Image (cartoon, rainbow, N blue to C red; front, side, top):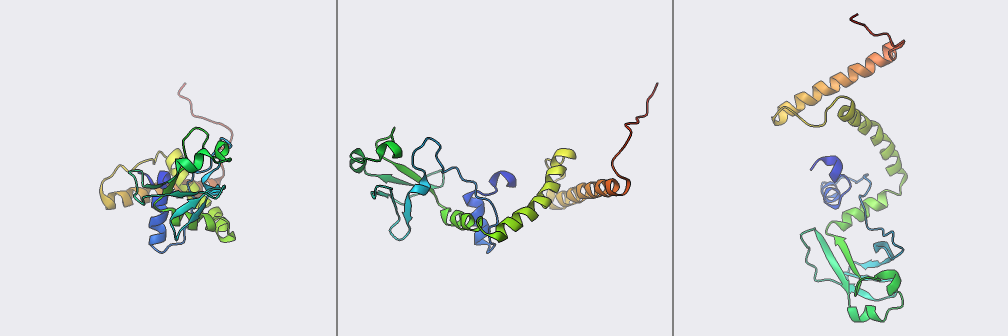
Length: 187
């Protein structure tokens, strides 16, 4: 999986946090619902007892086993949900509410907290400048994948691409952009 598609996922954030690096990375999150029903953020997670508490005060329990999608399912009792006055805003099309929690949710929570700091905003702006250079390599220079094999081949190929990009930048700064639209013709 290319890095830019895994950037901000639970697995990547856990890798960064596990390496002792503070994650100044936006969290890739799809837990907010847009159908006017409660999102996962409306439920309170109690880490000590490993349960979620719904807005009506009912609990969602789990077996604690992660599924093949690397999430733990928290499910409410059907009996609790049948009589709940908030059921239309919670789970109108299901017998009871179910919440999926990523196995790396702790790392995701840490990254969400960091996203609200001034240090995050500063590093995001600085990162944009560097990442823009990589985006230009991919789009303007056709550097969307490595063509040489092995680590030394990839390193050499990347160095050549960076040299081309730096020469282009230097030429534009020293000489300015091309002007006049003059082209050589063969006629």
